[in-house]
Image (cartoon, rainbow, N blue to C red; front, side, top):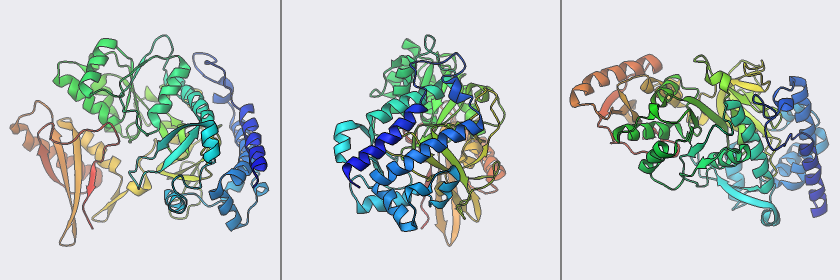
Length: 477
């Protein structure tokens, strides 16, 4: 398409988005950032998504070569997609689809709406996928995206209970190319919540920052939050007596793993919250916890913003929609990104959708039980299929186990063998290793119906990381 036609399609989409962005500088009240959107009926939310979709598809066709090719291949034109139900005619987009496109069109791929001229004119920052399920892919995002992230993230963090004038935050994460904590940073700025800067300092200094500067929000991966608690205790600080009131996590399952949630909240005497999303298609608060669910020890659920994204759950074999309440894999259409407005991107985490309003009063679609793990992370061990989160729940439920562990899978003489290497607690002596080994073996058998060789390690043996912990080492061919 010509440059004027592409710009016209972009402007049309931006105007539609602006109509449905309640972008005032602060919250409506103590309960809702945007009462109009946070409490809209299901029909109202569907109507908003429909209007955005009708403007988005022409924008994609004009500005994103990847989607223009896909539409041409299946014989669709933008006018064919008028309703949310019409999305079913578009094949879901996988990470493998993006990887193949990137190989053909380096270095950015053809699946984003920002070309070189747009990047130099409106660009903000690049972000990279984690690379846990393939080579990292770099995405260019714009200044428009930065503002929408700040707005959606502020809405989500307001739902968690974060408040200006009461809270301050420490982001315990290196400011690298990974998306989550950059968005959190800008969302906190939007809320007027100050930040104790801790991105480039070591863990011991972060522990001292917590003790000295008394932030109330600690943002990091679940693994790092556990590690920091251990480090504080080893150096005479008590994380449970610290100023931290909220643990704000992402990057790994945490909120949806019951034993890990108990361990995190117990270590810090704080309430756990999390974001859900992905760099490709839901880099802002596509999903988030809320204060009402976090205060309930029962089953968790995750709000999925229903005016900015369209969420589906598909059967992983047929890639067809499943009924509400039935388990499938998460798929998202991003209706609010200038740079990466993906259609039906397969995030791939297992969950169930529910439409009932939450106890907090928000009416967005929810992921019931949170997210159990991604389909491409699923393990098959001696014919037993399970998520790594099942093993994580088993390990975290053994009180005598330390914070770090790894699972090593090997194949010998045609048989799978699983070794669980788990650290003991910092003050544990050798006499505790036998009981820990027995308790851990029993926990794994009960949770996964598998026998594992248990290896107990001294505290400090395994590596620590701020990023996503890689706890599974699969050495099988």
